[in-house]
Length: 297
Length: 55
Image 1 (tube, rainbow over the protein chains, first blue to last red):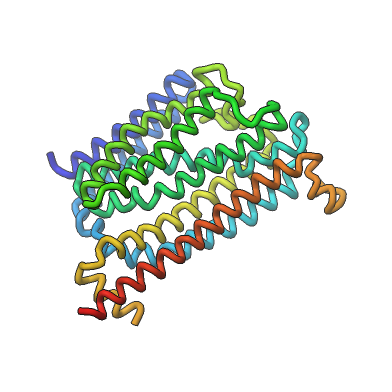
Image 2: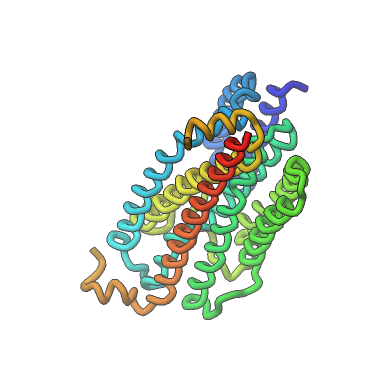
């Protein structure tokens, strides 16, 4: 099977899964969204299949190292601007909640951190899987670069959640489905990192880590749907796919801005870290030596 | 603006501890991660340079 077909199939599976999830949660109500999603998936995957003709060329650490370096400032500045605007909306514009008073403002870090903890895991599992399937070094490095940031956001989601739970529920912690599955996510990140660190041969470490990341991905839909599937103390989703948000528009705006800021921050930080990993792992490659003479000397 | 005074803002309607702890910890994590990455970058570059000079 050619590379093109593998990538095309992978993309189609992702689009189909998303479409199926929407179908199961909302029925035929959002058939338009579903159709658009499938169309978009097909177009995107057609493009990446095209891109994959030169996959090995683009995916070498040597070409990616300077590209990543050029991308970092853009994402860092975007994150800075978004976080300033997001904090302004969160504290100066968004109104007091009629039920939860000012304590609800924790939402502006808690929800974006929780979203990122799941998004980063999916990205990490995706790159780990690509690394495993195509034996491409850079993909595995990308997965490795995402893990620590994902673990930090998971920890933040847990701690800010319990800081919100105490005044609202009267307890810092409760073993309900949402909280427990998020805690398992933290252990998955930590497991991925320690497993990779404990295997000396980096390529073997990549493969072992990839397996763990892929198997652990089953936890993500469990976290996401836990508030639907089980009776949890945790409140339902703040935002549902397709449905209008139930909160004030400015609250919603603050949350989205903070989430975007976290997202841009994650990309910047992961790119910085992947550059470190490339240097650490490719130190003996000729191009790294040439680069270090050019860049640092 | 939602706040009558700066002290009302810092008081967060009585939830100051929970709100500021959440935001403070998040800021701390970000600062820590960026500093740790800077260290790692400069260390990686230093070692790479050392290695290329020894050739």
